[in-house]
Image (cartoon, rainbow, N blue to C red; front, side, top):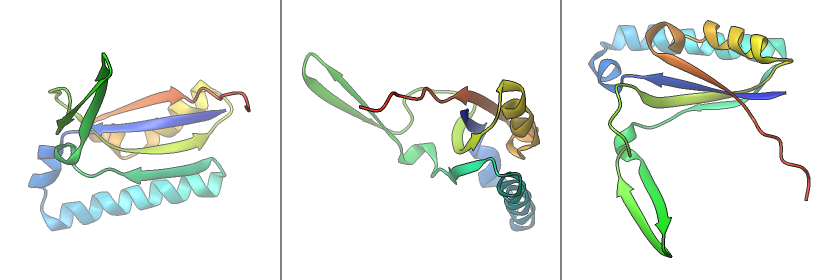
Length: 118
């Protein structure tokens, strides 16, 4: 079953990090990604640009509205994701707990709703 592991963290904290700490965090994520790949569960994943680069799109009554920046004011922002293939919720949650983001923010584990072929 496919799962999306969503990584939430505080962008302001990351922006304050010194280069040495950023290097440590990057190395931890590289090791985690390698572990996912070695285990054969990795399907994809990427880091996201800051929420200030995001836009929110809504359509109501046929009118499209585009809002720049994050839609909601939250304590943590979506920073990235991993798509994995795991046998069950417990296995996906175990992988989420091993992600470096779990130690500094929140990991959301969401099963992917597989659509039937058209």
